[in-house]
Amino acid sequence: MTITTTLSLPAPVQQWFDDVLLSRPQPLLIHNKMAMKKRLPYRSGTTVRYRRYNNLARATVPLGPSGVTPPPQALSALDIDAQISWYGSYVIVTDQVTIQNQDPRRQWLHQCVA
Image 1 (cartoon, helix red, strand yellow):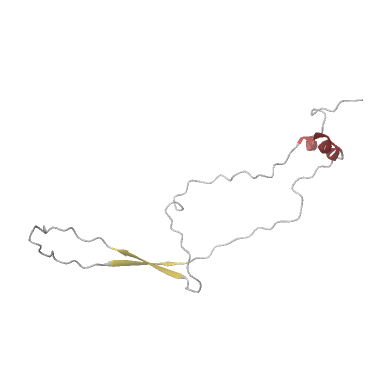
Image 2 (cartoon, one colour):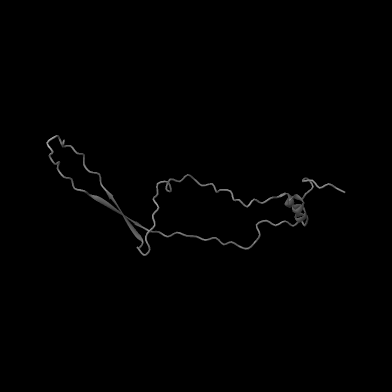
């Protein structure tokens, strides 16, 4: 009776397929770092308007203890409109097997190891 070792097994029997996928390498892009994700309400259109107030001028008049009201400043704002762009893709997945072993002894070896 011959002894079966890992050296005498065919290559498909010695393979093991891990079902945990490796992460994909991605470049260090900065456009995702400072983005602000927002959801638009249902049926609100395809444009969102953001508003940013401009800085006020420096206060150069001291208030002092007399309680004098300083001169007022006008508040100004900048409106920025963003238009939604739709992007998409799809993947075709077939019903083919990822890995297939042609060796009939594979079933028997799997039962012996388990």
